[in-house]
Length: 179
Image (cartoon, rainbow, N blue to C red):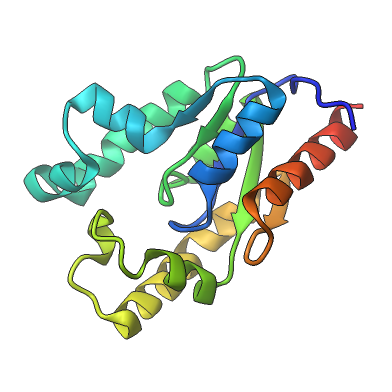
């Protein structure tokens, strides 16, 4: 399959642990376009780690920064942008992203998400939780965010497939839409 640069930027959304950053880097490499991780961009802009923003300023401030960065990212003309798990906060944000680029939902089951994030101490939302609490938190977040995630142009199951195959699936879907 010929891999040409997409006409619009690609925005990867999904829960923490769905593979947005991993798949995003592979996808960008295969397409020869830049990769951006929204959380990394926030850290660069603020000089603080995400966990520090949560600790010193709270989740509300982080979500405000995230919203500003998402809308700024929607203005990019090319690239793969891995959004934070909670970046799709409102219908306005979803609409702006879909207007400017391809919104792609990496859909992984809670059991896979739990396996991937349960020992990750860098995720402020999951701090100080045992496996059962983490699983319940993931289920709750998926319920809250799922409606916005499912408005994506493309939904790709990513629970068991290797990241390279997930990237290939995205490329095939984009190629169908842009051909």
